[in-house]
Image (tube, rainbow, N blue to C red; front, side, top):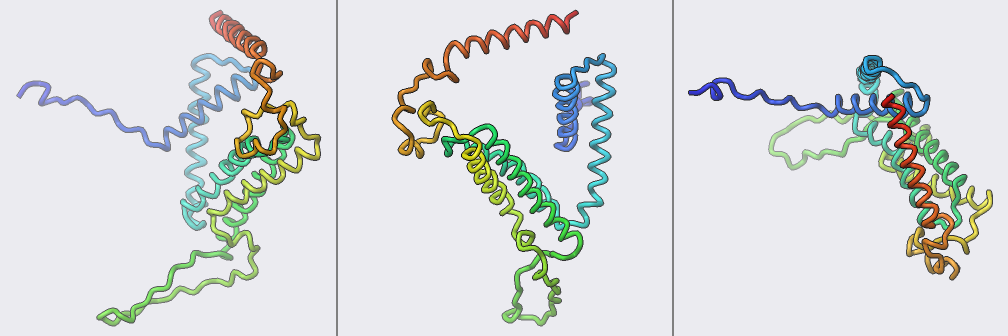
Length: 255
């Protein structure tokens, strides 16, 4: 056999999803918060030290959460409950913009805050009730009447959940629905109370076709050139500004 057969090429180790998440989160914190938000420009060595320090902190937090998860109902319910806070808010904001013509920025912010608070309250409240023993998983009934051999099955005793808050007794799959409806309802009401948009100046192309029948005729006469928000002049000015800013930033980093 030749040397290649005796010494095969080393295989690249696969990067786990956990380490990938740590690295990505650390770089996002460094780029978007440290450099952009605070405007701190660090040297290459200091940047590496900061990123590695953030990764270590994330690892310590992940290890510490192991002792918390063992007291909860399971990793699936915990992850689904936490993701519901973000997904319900995002879906609610997009739906608000597509289906509510008079929605405004204030309404979207208020709806997002309400949806996050509502879904977070139900999510963390449920997990706290599970950790304290007030809630528990229920298993389906098992019948052994037709089994050929005699066997004894111990039926677990369930705690009384009648005193637990009703929303905490819901399945974690309903948390997304609760956050979504809260975002949509609060965003709609807040937009209307804080001064809704003039529907005659609204571009019908940014609204779902389901709502087109309720819009005034003026919405369908707006073209990209006549709309103050989608005009070519604004697009050109925005593109020029971004291009000049990028060139200026590149020149600053070079020197």
